[in-house]
Length: 422
Length: 146
Image (cartoon, rainbow over all chains, first blue to last red):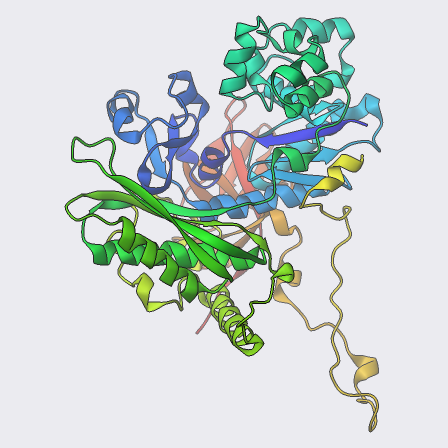
């Protein structure tokens, strides 16, 4: 019953390299929204010991010295490339589970266990040829082990040419391999768990694997107990437990430059509320409350202020109701005289819309009208492009909008930005 | 492997492409059925005509005149299939000095040529030991007149 985890290498950087071959072989980082910090690093950057999440301003010196190229994140491009990779991977198994933008599990039960490595190579070559994106393949009996196998393939601990099949290892070989890998590399072992495990003398994957699962369960959590079982070839981590269904929707971004006046702040909050409501409707959910927060720039030597407030809602997915509530919340938390760097809207208490409870005073006609309006807005925005119609409160100019100064063209999603060939 | 079924995105088996079926909306109960019903066929789609490997197909814009002889003009839209293995004689997109270039690929013994289709441009030669990266194979070109 083997399962494979296919994971794209430095996915965002790889996407950029497909269309800009000059980036090949040079150190490249992709920066988060607003060009804040490094969210993807090429192998050359990792070799410089630059950590994930390092703020870009802290990197500028190093970047100059080593010729690091920094790019703003281009999510339209990454989203399209991810969809391509995932559909290609879907052809390799009857069961695929997309775990994140750049990784998915494939059920390989129906395949001959002796040809799995070759199959992994075929997967890898096909994705590379058809999309230009390099991937690694980890194969094992459980998801936790498949993750680990992938890690080994990527780091070159085991396997060859980006494919590692733990099923093919003898128990002794496994023991030797697992004794080399730090326990923190295991899927599901976070930083907190790691420290506690280290204190108990559990340092390597092998240490964790051979610890009594019962003991782990009582000292840590049921989930980590299952991780131990999974390391022992017992498939038992159900995906629901790892990546819980969306319980909240967050839209928040840093501003391009700091903002102090209420008008700009209101516009940004209304805009994020709009985006959050769109996501909510996409999920066919309703929200029972929302949280608005504002924050100054903690990296600046200036007066600091952070505040948030939760505003209850009559459960809804209506953009204008959500905006009103968000703006009411903003009014409560706003203080004059600070330079704000970030606002955000968090929708909470999400429930499926199908189970929406009727309100005592609700007229179903009003609900139907609201649904119709939202449906029309969403349809227009889908057809004509994001933000074609919206609520006036969310503004048009967006002076506060985020910085994406180094963004590559939308090579695959905009007719005006196609790659050019000479 | 039941735990794979637990969450959201599960794709159908390979090759099970959705089948589009024309939808008839006329009412059958009263009157005659439309005489065209038996003859309804899927409307032709340019996508289907020009794109054979959806996930591996990319559009690129031609610049310059190096491929006039092949009917590729400045500003044309080229359809590129990355899944195809390039053969001698194909028009390809290749990576040369970090740029993407469109040329005809010619193999002559140990030498590989990227051949422009315009006498004003010269061939780019690759000898044994030199690496040539083919980005994709051009399968068609389209131009708009309006």
